[in-house]
Length: 217
Image (cartoon, rainbow, N blue to C red; front, side, top):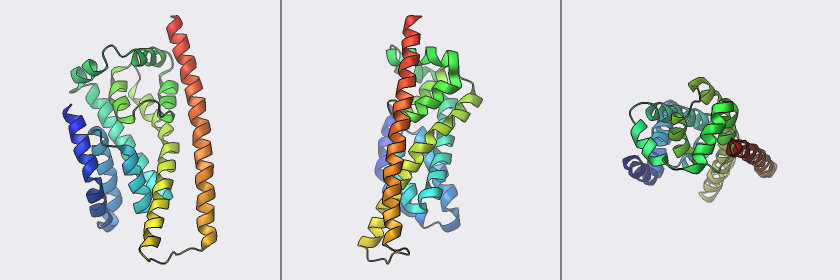
């Protein structure tokens, strides 16, 4: 409960926090990564931070920094669930049938299932970080499965990049590129959406299959 409240407060402060990060110059990327990690532990909305990353740093750097921050934060949450916060997390997920099925699937193919969970938006990211700490998945497999967050990082960073560009144009700042550059950005965004939709569908099908196998046991 305390973390959830802290997360809502942190979410309300995101515009001010990102504005400060923008003014840090060379220290901005490191500060952003650390902020993202802390916000993840505190249940702050990761999508908003990734949008901010795209607006602040552009597509490639924004997606990279968001991915690094999300990975660090998810690992911290995972470690907390296996130590200090274990009792709290256990009470939170007690009786959750969906998690029980996922737990059985992870016992069979931990790395694969966690990777698919990272691709699928059906499971809340921040909650999943803590819940997975109670499963039998090894930390190394959990860390490697974080690669499943990359498509989402690119998608939201792309959104943030476009939003940042639109804000700059509205403010009268002359763009460095011509119209063809922004047309390419639009085409790339459509392609990213299509690829993400395809990956999400594949992840859902695989998870459904894992659930079916678990229910037959």
